[in-house]
Length: 339
Ligand code: QUE
Image (cartoon, rainbow, N blue to C red; front, side, top):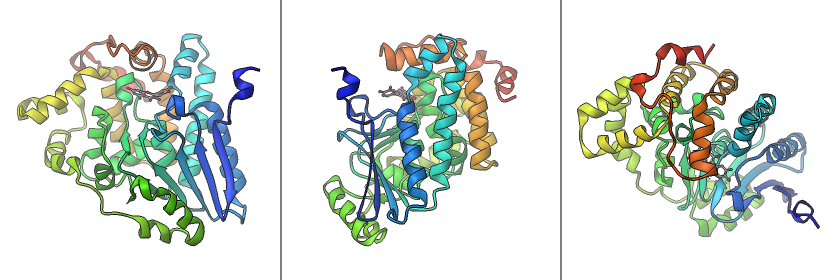
């Protein structure tokens, strides 16, 4: 028998005791979101929207390591290299449609984040009404490392985080802790892993009241400690000005940020800063439409295939960016990508 015939479904969807339960079920790939999973999630949410047997929806990841590590950028890269740009666009369009459906969902949507949630995984959680993090949660928008940009509605939600946290997370791809996620308002409740089964039983028995009943005090936030430095150094809207502020600051924290930013695609950093500047005053629907237009330009830039190769396919972590520095990026070329 083929692997496909033996394979379990990549999304489990079941209704019991008033709860529509979604499980991302590709644990070997850290539940990374492929087109099939997007279709299955969309179909389940559509079916449950008007179903009186579903009072609330939960979503979680199988396998204990990840909620969802991202989108299927490996497949997108293969489409780009094969010249199948329509297939790449279809992926992003269906992913962003799902993000919007979650944001507009008429029932409570509770994401249980007990592990890695990055990129596309953030798109399945952040737009929902409630986001629970366990002590094992790790969140990030790491797309500048693969020369993509923070998408899935990030141009809407990141500029709306406190101070300049959103631009900081978008440019550096910083991985943040459960305490940070609550501090930044990316998460709403902290529940220990050991209490998740009890929380799920409580959600079925008494609905959303179970969230408050199971919530623990959030752990300490490192992001809170860095907040003044972040707000100061990431105050400008352009990357060269941010780099200049970090260089002028010159302390260990600033040097660490400069080291991180030096590994990211310079083109992607500049695209990302402009994207968040624009998204700050736009609706979620308009932000998602802007991001979809931008994917067409960004995925055909050579940095994208190179970034996915270096970080995801070969894992050599040695991307060769062109241009190689922010100073060499032509601001007019960045603006042209938003046309
Ligand atoms: C930056 C990213 C992603 C990444 C690594 C980065 C990303 C993404 C994946 C990923 C993870 C697991 C998989 C997979 C892809 O890795 O967006 O197919 O199984 O989806 O440094 O932005």
